[in-house]
Image (cartoon, rainbow, N blue to C red; front, side, top):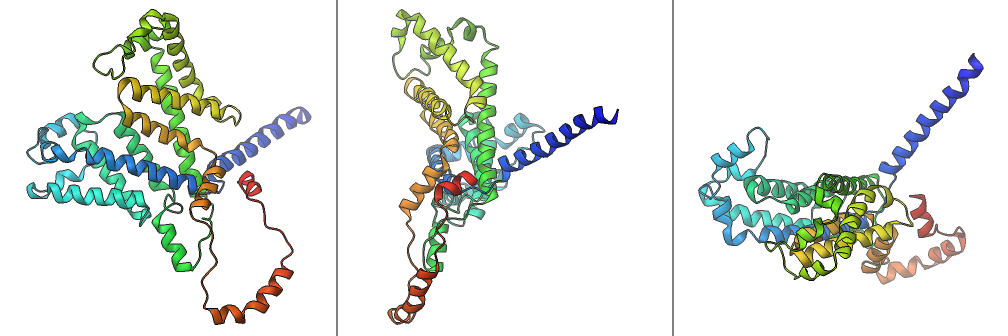
Length: 352
């Protein structure tokens, strides 16, 4: 009996151990933070743009006597525990608070004091969204999601003023150190984007027009959003059907196929086509672009790292001329002694 049970027990134990190793490798393998730094810049630029758009109607929406009074907003949100620092801003503090918020977003985008400004930027994004809930759309939700994960990871370790100042203090520029925190933040964005597309596709399957192939026509022919005349598609129903069914198939399969290296370029190309179409035909460019920023978390990390290295090449530490001459013999000896080659960047990337 023991001989019959032992293989099953060994298999179960090995399955648990291998699953634990794979889980740990997926989330916590140290990764280069360059891609995270790129996402910080792109997200920060979108945050600056979307919050700058509030300036002409700032008092109307965020002032104590605005169109949406605090009492009305609390009634809408009820027990949602929707935090916003706007509840604490006095009547004369609307513009100073707004200017301070924009300054925080600018510092976050530039990557200065990023550990602090990333958390403060998250508070800014959440506070603006919760103060004007009737003006909150998918763009604001993706903004908040990306800012949250950028605050969790070391998004200021690359392509940032923090990195530049650290190099100046050290006297030379060097590649950023891979970290588990960078990988964790990128994986959180990866998984969140997969969940978004999966449920977007599954929710479409609840609508009859997505099964009949007419849904894309209804979106493109909607005069409320139409920015490009696509009514010529009425004479090509097969093309409308193809676009409709391709959209659903792509969204549902994204979470499975984007992880396959050979298929990832095709899935990301599909994202570019989908969101470019949303921007061109429906005019929702900000939403389209921020979704592509999220998809950029799947870009090859080695390519982004090489781009960051090209933008900030390594430089030798500065030494006075006399010190350089005095160290010349030691440096020459060190060159002859150092016979072990450096590990190639590609090998480090594959190992990570």
